Image (cartoon, rainbow, N blue to C red; front, side):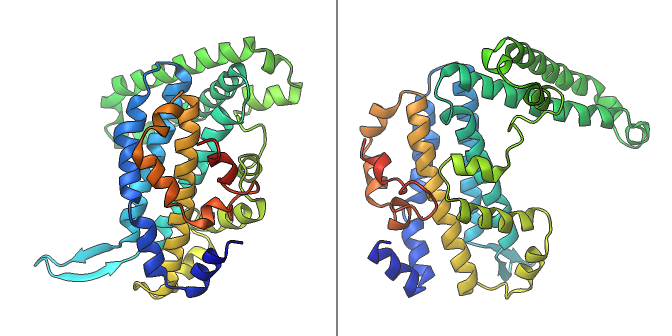
Length: 317
C-alpha cells in the first residue's frame, strides 16, 4: 500500500481529506454533464441507454455531495435550528450508485461482441419492463384503489404508459428469441429470462461486482452495510443512535463514500468514452488530465478492486 495513503488513513483528519476530495469534484461532474455526454451523437439503442445510466450516476453524485455538507433546518423565523447529517440517505444513494454502475458494466462493458451487448441490453429491458408491467396491472385491477383515488380519471395516461411498455417488451422479446446467444442457453437459463424475468442470470450483485473488478471482500461487506439502510436493518438503527453532529465518525463515512464515488466516476468516464469512441476527445481535454493527476492514491492503487486499481488502465492515456 502506498505510504502516502497510509499516512492519510493514520492521520484521521477527515475534514482535510474530504476537502481534498471535494476540491474539483463538482467541476469534474459538470464536465461530464455539460460536455462529455453531449459529445455523444449516436442514436444507437446501446448508446442511448448507456447515456441514461451515466446521467443517473451524475444525478446521484450531485445529491451525495449535498448530503455530505448536511441539511440546515430553520424555524419559521428563518433562524437556523441545527444541521442534520443524514447517514442513511448517503448509504441508500451509494448503493444505487453501485448497482447502476454494475448494471452499466454488465450490459455494455463486460460483453466483448456487439451481439452480446445487444443481447444483454434487450434481456435487461424485457425483464425489467415485464416486472413493472405485472405490478402495474395488479394496481389497475385493484378496484378499491381506483375508487379511492383519481386513478380512473388517469386511465388514458396509464393506457399510454402500458402501450409503451408493451411495445418495448415485444421488441426486446423478439430480439431475444432470434439471438444465437439465447438459442445456445440451456432450457433453465432461457426460462430464467423469459418466464422469471431475471436478466442477471441468477447472479447476485456481489457476483456481478466481482466480474466488474471490485474486490469481493470489500464489496461484500460494503454492500450489506449499505443495504441495511435501504431495508431498515439493525445497523441502520444503530447509525441513527450515534451523535448526529458533524463528528469524526460522520466525516469518516463521508470520506469513504466520496472516495468510492470518485473511483466509479473515473470508471464511467473511461468506459463510456471508449463505448462511444470519445477516447481522443477525452485525451484532448485539460480537465481530464487534471483529474488523473489529482486522483487519490487509494483509487490508483486499487483498494476497491482486484486488478491494481486504475494504474494499468490509465497507462493508455
